[in-house]
Image (cartoon, rainbow, N blue to C red; front, top):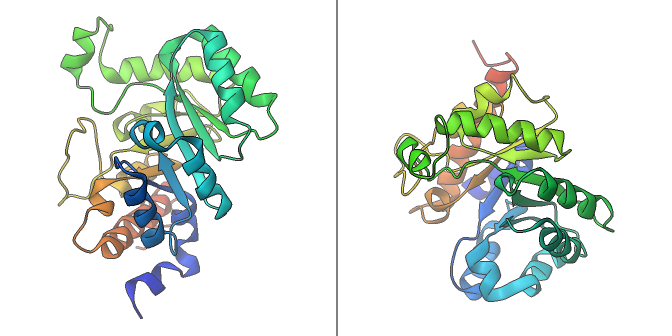
Amino acid sequence: MTVEAALLESKYDAARKATYLALDVDQPARALELVESFAPVIDGFKVGLELFHRAGMAFVDQLLARNLRVFLDMKLHDIPNTVSGALRAICDSPIEMVNVHAQGGRKMLEKAREAVSASAYQPLLIGVTVLTSLSSRDIRELGVVGEPQDAVLRLAKLCQEADLDGVVCSAEELNMLQTVVPSTFERVVPGTRLATDDAHDQQRTQAPGQAMAAGATRLVLGRAVRDAADPMLALQRYWDEMIEGVDRRHGTASR
């Protein structure tokens, strides 16, 4: 059995549902090549700022026409009315998830919630807490009190109070978040790395199994899978770790 055939087995369905592959490339043609390569086994893709600003909603619509799940990683951060208007436009399409910067404040988050709730399609609305590329030093330079984890907790509470569906955070904050948000609150984690992977520009990262064991509900997989010498084998390693992590979280790991 090939690796690709193995990845289609039902044992990987939960990991598949919890995965978005990041299409963080600068050309729509390259992004479509990635979709063609991975869509046989992955049905969730993240469209970020670089690709969106080159290809726009027309590209997103191509993914949706193929019945693929789309996380539109817009990180909206502006005055409340502007963010509300942007979300009304975005939610004219049946994307699965979109995000805003929690640092936009309570009023912005509440207006975002209103816009999504009033839309024909109501994607998950997620708040970005502290970018995983930011270190403790970066946080201090920005004038934020405390460590990144402290800011994540404050912003996660704010997102919950504004009735958002979850947050984007690093794996390092997951254990603490379990004490302040309900189990139904989405915790979307980018930047996980296997022990052998390059961390690239991520500062606060853990392995995918650790992240799932600590309460992550969805992972965004990027360069470590997308640019691997054998992408399908790399994906299988990630999914195997994710399954093991969920088993540990629920106390069902093999003994």
